Amino acid sequence: MIDLLLNGFVTLFVIVDPLGLIPLYLALTPGVGRKARIAMAWKGCLIAFVILTVFALLGLAILNALGISLGAFRIAGGLFLFVIGFELVFEKRAERKGRSASKMVADKDDDPDEDTDVAAFPLAIPLIAGPGAIAAVILLSGKLPSAIGQASMVGVIALTLLVTFACLAVAHRLDAILGATGRAVISRVLGVILAALAVQFVADGIAALFLENGGTFNTL
Image (tube, rainbow, N blue to C red):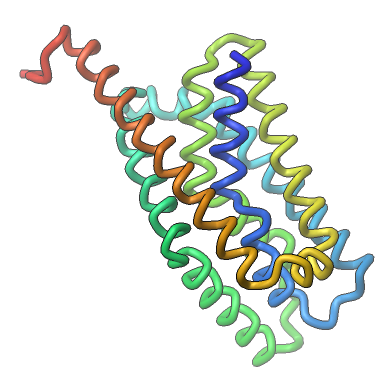
């Protein structure tokens, strides 16, 4: 179980990408004081924790209700996570999120009277608890079906988001220390790790489907 939990933490940490969130977070909170920024980061991480925990605990039930096997979801989720890993390696994800953040800032500037809760959107959803993170917690939850395993999975989510909050709370300092080059190097390394984990998810999903169909892929 320890190996699975470590695997889960690494996978979720890479997908959430706290270091990659720093420049986006700073762009979304221009002119905001340090205390207010920390409060927003805490609220955003708390909302993301609730969302990811719900999917970790109820995700498998939702899949069963829809008639989707865990093996099929592992393959789909693995392919999805591989795309995220690819984007991290080639810096496409930061570029895409950066465009979204810039658009949100521009929209906010165009309508200064609009009361936009940045903590809920876009920080909690989709920057932290996005489709990739949701798919990851459901996949990892499927490997830990016991009550202890589910509780441990919630602990992994909490730990990941605590690290994320810590990074956002000192966003200015970390941004100055790492710089663009440091963030790029870390993102590429984490992207390679995530791609490897995604391939493992796909392999596990194929094996599960093979066993579910009695050793053959012919379902007719």
